[in-house]
Amino acid sequence: MNMRESANTIIETIERAGGEAYIVGGAVRDTLLGRTPGDYDLATSLLPDEVIPLFPVVIPTGLEHGTVTVVVEKIPFEVTTFRSESTYSDRRRPDHVTLGVSLEEDLTRRDFTINAMALKPTGLVDLFGGQADLAAKIIRTVGRPEDRFGEDALRMIRALRFMSQLAFSLDERTEQAIKECAETIQYVAIERVAIELEKLLLGAGRPAALRAMLRTGLGMYLPGITPDTIERLIASDLDGVSKDDVWTLLLDAGFSPDRLSAFKRSKKQEQRAKRLVCLVHLEQLTDWQRYALTDEELAVLNRMTGRNHPDRTTLPIRTLKDLQVDGRDIVALGLKKQEIKHALHYLEQHVVTGQFVNQRPILLEEVKRWKNRRENESFNA
Image (cartoon, rainbow, N blue to C red; front, side, top):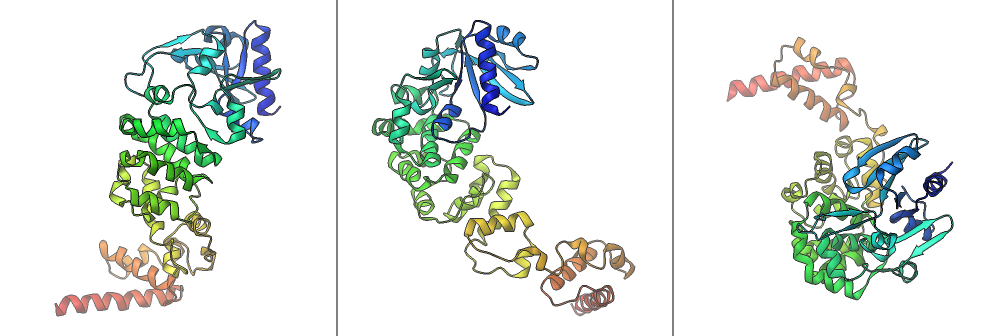
């Protein structure tokens, strides 16, 4: 049974129990676009306490919001009770959630028309022109855009993210509302903004979405991002590759490495971006530059730039462990503490760059020479 069939089984089970249930959100949008959804969310008229007894495996993941996770053949499906939401005092979360409303009320609270449709085996519910906007390739809010952005300011950058991912354009009224509400993006947790920015920079429609960011002024409220940064991102022909790698694009566009921490990304993302940005415009890499990368990073660099740098299997060694001597050998030659580390690094560099052959007798002899030079330099100083 595939995911769609499993989702339909959940719907049929709920309907047999006297409730309504639909596939909602991005899964409907992707299905209508002919894409395979990554997951399926469902909405139902039943309350969580009524859903839980209907299925063998149910996890109460968000009861306060009316959500449980139904597991079918080890695949999780979020099932949420139809709900309406009150005002958003913090521009992020509703002050109050009301469960047990109609499907229409539930769909009314959603962000964009293309995400506000509901689907079940017997047909599609489209109350706000989502199908028409999909056909016209338009991103438009459900109802007044000022209201939607006032509820959750993150929706402004989500609009640009969907522009990029789907290669759609932005409804004029929606764009004007972003311009008017842009400063409120500052009230949104930066981690949420960063996730949307990563997706935006990975999309095929990235240049158009970034131009919209310039027109609306939204970018000026993102930490460290300037109009020049955005212009350079628009002109960039680098592939973003993955969410871990789009930060290299930002650095290449002039974003300060010191500001990466403002987006609260992982150390892995920060470090990779700083390593790769120095290499993206090099036609050829030295052996030492290839050695300093992991196999994965070199593959990412090739995809990002469209180049074909040789893989690391052609190097004399791929890690320090491949040297034919180790720390114990260095200790036996009378070196101590930091000297051991420096000696190994010396050998590593010279083997990688082809100046020394990776053979034990040769390396030991080179360490002796290196030790003698250091002692002479120390004596003469």
